[in-house]
Image 1 (tube, one colour):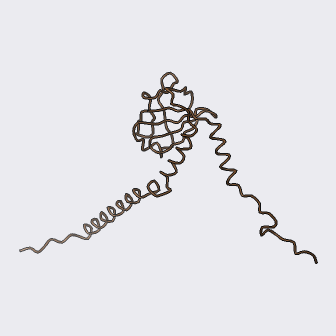
Image 2 (cartoon, one colour; image 1 turned 60 degrees about the vertical axis):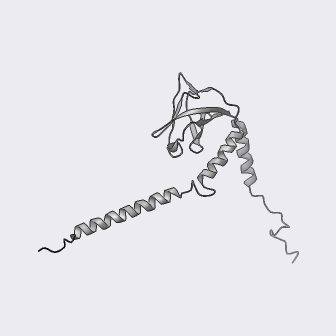
Image 3 (cartoon, one colour; image 1 turned 120 degrees about the vertical axis):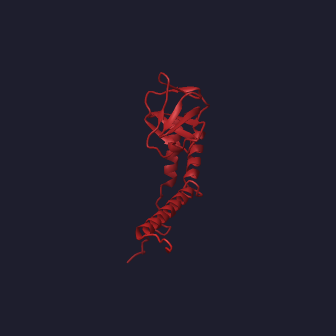
Length: 173
């Protein structure tokens, strides 16, 4: 008659390692799910605020724009993107499906036909995402720069008046 079969030392260590690995993975996934995008005032809120600023500077939708070179891009969440085609020319693009990698990917691509990008035809490429451009709106870059300058000026610290707690003269002696 044989007794119960007990696991060997290496089997116990392997099981412990797997348990720690699964627990670590669960903590990592939970941390991602409650990251800054869902936190109040987090990335999603910042993206929404920036999107509203760009929308305020955007013109009426156009069917296409000329793309000779993509100089820069600004992701605004998973459905909006600003592309800079020249120093003083930018376009607000809306895509039809969430482009999850657009926000995180270091580079994006845009399809075009003979140097023009068309809404409802061309796509934004970010990592593995391929998202159709739903809407194109030209941006008033001068207005954006003016708003940014005003924001910087409103944050400038103004020197205090001498009479408001600054250095005071002791009055003689």
